[in-house]
Amino acid sequence: MGNERRLLALVICLVLGGGLLAAVLGASRASAPQPGHGSAGPAPADYVDIGDVSPSPGPGPAPGPDGSAGSVTVECGRNGEGHYNEDNLVVSPGLRAGAHHTHAYVGNLSADAMSTDASLDAAATSCRGGDRSTYYWPVLRRTDRPGTRPFETSAGHGNAGAVLPEASVRVEFRGNPVSKVVPMPRFLRGMTGDAVAFTAGAGADVRARWGCSGSPDRSTTRYPRCPTGDLVTRTLAFPSCWNGLDTAGAGAGHRSHLLFPGAGGICPQGTFPVPELRLTLAYEVPAGAPIALDSFPEQRHSPRTDHAMFVNAMTDGQMAGVVDCLNTGRDCRT
Image 1 (tube, rainbow, N blue to C red):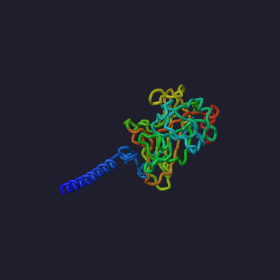
Image 2 (cartoon, rainbow, N blue to C red):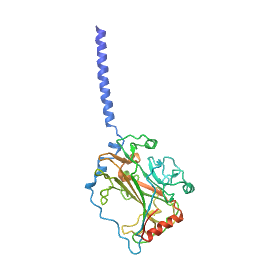
Image 3 (spheres, rainbow, N blue to C red):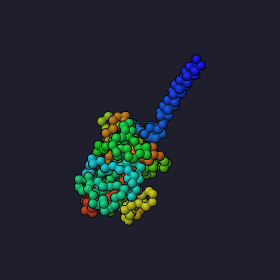
Image 4 (cartoon, rainbow, N blue to C red):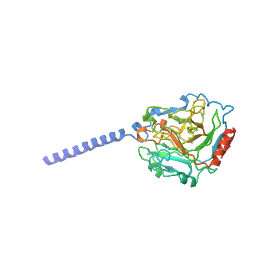
């Protein structure tokens, strides 16, 4: 009889202990950061209803008599080739997976960390007119859906979820409102945005603007919540004042050779206006779906960390055509 009581007590302890263990594990799982949520980011404050965003003051200054009022659209598709990697040829050349997050590309189909000027010049391109430049940016993900393809899971570092393909990619060059532009040199490297803006504590290099296709007069540095049927848009404008000497920036910022013009379009002293590159990306995002940019882990997928890079691999003739179109005020497509 004593043995039976001891056995019953042991069973009760195991049952109660197992329940307690399950409760502890359940609480642990519930409190653990989930990709794209909680302490891993984005935070609720990173989202905004587009209707709550004030209309923009309007476009920049109108081109003057000495300005370059044209535009050139380069038809490069929308990465139907599936060109993705975790490299960053501009910031960390020669270092595989140096970005710690996934980039999407249009243009040069060979671009990766090991690319050289010669390899870019010899590669195929997605651009219809033969532009071999490379244009790239961090992917946007739906964090409520798991990634299933290799490029969706290879980045790691807290970047998880199904990659949203771009519904459209617009590669456009614009002129300068107060001056004619001069050609970019071959293999000029450029970047816009700040991949560490969340921890930097400053917004001077935050350049990306987010919006909704149905509200082109409203833009924000937060993830927009758009009405049903609208596309989510990202616009990334690049610096367009070149120092006339270098094709790559010095130091950690990689920005010293290419600067942004002032508010009136005037380039800083010692720099010259070159064609302004502008990337406009659009995505089909169901209403209420959570989205997040790929980022470094400590940046918590903040939309303020959006950024993009390019390497100009146009031939001298192709670049001359862009400059002529801009300086003569025409709208061209290549």
